[in-house]
Length: 354
Image (cartoon, rainbow, N blue to C red; front, side):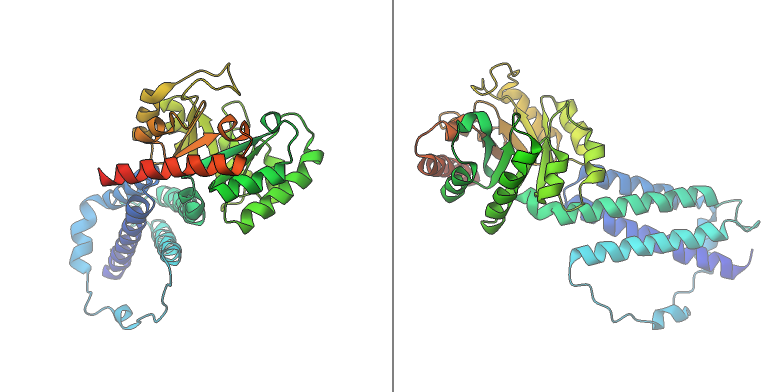
């Protein structure tokens, strides 16, 4: 085999390995995403191992000092991590394509498989999309903390959604979800659209419950689905990559499945008996603790959360607590919200101190 061919393969193996390692570390240390980390790590190991016994031959032909490519210093600077992710992904994809083409040569195909390299390249395309998606949604995911208020039509009992939303926002709520099982989507659209504007101006997340088309129509920050709604994978394909998806779960297995399929946060419950859903299975604090340990996603505790038990839910690891009746069932919504938010913040401070 020509030494020049070995040098090309060596250079591109190195570019691929280095680029994948960068992406792997980003997934691990910046995104705290165990699923993406493991996928990138496995891909890197498989590619490096594919050269097998030819590793010595490749090293023999390496000539870093004599490589004219080292003189071509790029002056381009990346201003953010997202730019670096895209640049390294492209570097890996291009290197894989070079080796894929070389693997078609008779003298190379004995140790490089063109079909496997093509498969790896397509895998990197998907991993790049997932990484970029995570970064674009990272700010929204970080807002899944503190108080999460669900505007449930039945619990509102005829009160104006927008006015109530403004009151809970003034009280300090971080996330607002619109849930309505009764009215038509045509009736809900103008309400949801106004709520989205109110939330955006206040830098509060606005989430639609169940209705993918309504979330798309109003440009909501995200969609929340249950176990019996559209499959998470379908929702992810239809929402733009900067929108977040929440998923209701009751078990560790469901939580892990939601994370693997692309959920941005999970809502675990019912943690306590809930007056708005008395038929819901109570999973309890022990299960909440197990779920929090099993996933790297923000975990929202839901179901029967009150000022009296909110500290218990936070104490076992919940990042956020979702409430309905604890807020909407009170006369002074803004003040009730403020008191609950203060209780949550005090609990956080105590946790940090210990």
